Image (cartoon, rainbow, N blue to C red; front, side, top):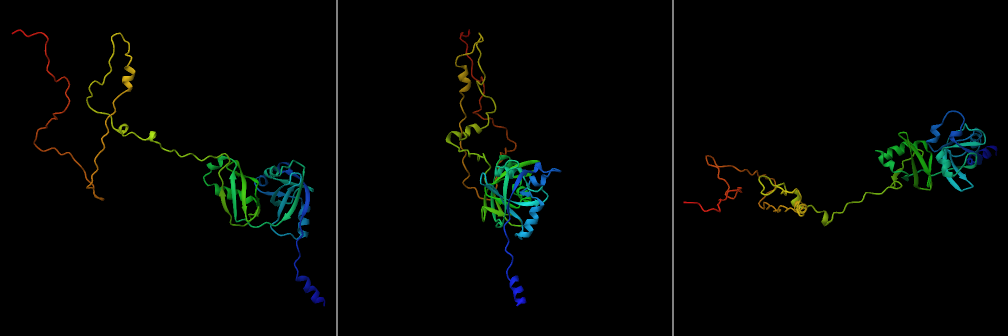
Length: 301
């Protein structure tokens, strides 16, 4: 009978009991001793040694995760624990966590042990457009989340990178509104930063079309009557301004394509002059002042 009774006790595992108590909360800057930047840049808190003794007796599930509740404002978040070195009756939180919970220094905070599902997906929204200047944002986020134990939808967490602090809003977590990110493979997506506007694509209209005559080269060689006239009294003509602006544009002549072109062939056109021949001048070439002059006086014979 005794053996059976002892065996019956071992058949049932001890059911973990919840940890639920209240502490006065303070920011990490109020913690006595050296400055604790490791707490400020993560998602874990510092609790008193008595909390560790109580948690050990309650046989809670590891890793230790807690639900923080500000009963005055009904704001909730989740976190892990970094150390048990706080003064009795006090807990120390990162500043961003106190900001999310709308807590002031010394206010009461309810802490309850919880068990959260493992994260498989999360979506973040940067709170500044400066986050787009980072070359590899996913690697920066992954490195920053190593100091976190869990994520809560709606929280604005702080990631420190390159001597700057970037705030990220947790828009979505799966499979629940609060998840554990300890030793998990989690897919991450980014939403456009707050205030970001995608550049508008320029739509070309008929007015923006390029005029082929503007791409033609300037006329070379002699151009008759290209100069500007001046009056003897020094005054400008009334229509001189318009005459400078109004200028005839060159006529654009579209080339004729080679309809006999075959793919893979190249043709090099050369102007080869016949050997031992005199140059034949173009008869249509313009020559200035080549006319014949006449005198008003009759020539005396």
